[in-house]
Image 1 (cartoon, helix red, strand yellow):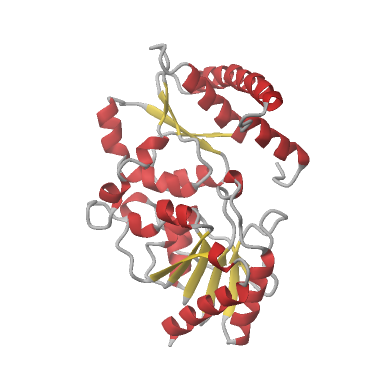
Image 2 (tube, one colour):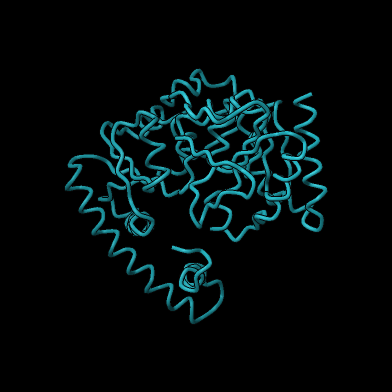
Length: 316
């Protein structure tokens, strides 16, 4: 659904009514509908995957799948689960899950995910529910669970890496990854396309070749002046390694790119988002620059200069 549409904004208002009586009334029936629909979704999954515990990961971030994978086996053992089906968002999350050797994965649409989650929360105490929200599994004490050096498995053990075969990446290539799925969902500001275009112009003038990681559609358009790349999740590390620097909004793409030794710039909307999602919370990472961009909202030229200067230093 188009996030700028009136319908989308209306539904988000119903989802978060705050203290508005009218939207609170609609929210009650909205949740009732989702719970009923979730029961239907659960019956379908039980039929397709009989005897399996349903694990729901209610997220649109493929990076969360990577975090979940690190301690997934231990969490299954702790929960006493032998057979499961992992339900994830269709599209990018599903494709990412297929590269990580999960035993059984079921793709769900966004409305199916929300419905199943509401049904799970409604029935969590009835003693008969075989649906588990496993999202907390990828968030528990992440500092100690995932910090580089504290886990005995590498990125290569978790993801089936394949070689990125795009031969267009040439010397002095900079990759831009300006799109994400989470910030807009939570009402956070994102950098305008004008910023990315002006950054591209600055880099081109300095002799860099610039690429945009994007689908190339209306939701993820190609930044003017760049060429398109769109690697699979299993190819991101190799793709980024072919560039001299990657400039990215904090997203699931970031978690896969961090295994590359290429210098990276990660952009965060505000201080609280940075405090929660900084890559240094989960890794020992020295070859990257983390920037909070709301500090530059009145003058993006300063942000562009900072990004360009970092790239020049790393390439000198």
